[in-house]
Amino acid sequence: MVPVNTRLSGSAHWPAQADDALAAVVHLQRNGADLGLDPSRMVLMGQGAGAFLAVHTTLSLVEVGLPPKGVVSLYGPMDFSTLDADLKTLGRTPARGPADDAASPESRLLGFAIGEDRAAARAASPLARLERMHEPLPPILIRHGDADTMIADLQAKRLREAWLASDPKATIDYKLVPGAGHGGEAFETGKVREDLLAFVRAALD
View (cartoon, rainbow, N blue to C red):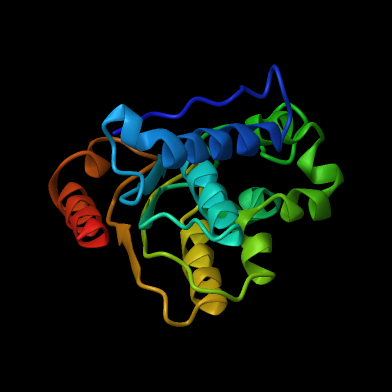
């Protein structure tokens, strides 16, 4: 496993983080053999904000003809413009302040208050990119807690739908994790861990 670091929102706004993640993965693809890695056998994975980056990076690699073998998205936000509305739709009390506010982590990342420019926030999402793509996509595993009060599981549902709409033949392993919130032990042990390991083995086989 190779962790990837990107600039934080305090030092650079989006899409600097996407540029950093893509540069790191391309470096591994080009120089992996020198590092004792097999560049042709790569699966991207992220949790929360990391899932947002993993999916974005996967789409960038697909666009240049260098797709990874698979991607894993664990409880990630996929459309900042609907974060607050999705929690409201599910009747959940947000575990933090509104994402639409200028002080939210998502607004700080983008460099503007999401509530003041929802269209621009939507344009920065993986879902908006998928709407413009109609080409083969790598297998994806999506897991999200059905009791998440930070990122509504509707985000995961829309990722699945957008992935399938972009590539109807894509392999999609999508499940909600009963009773799970935003991360935690449910994603680190038991069934989710078993599913993740099986997915990675199959993708790299």
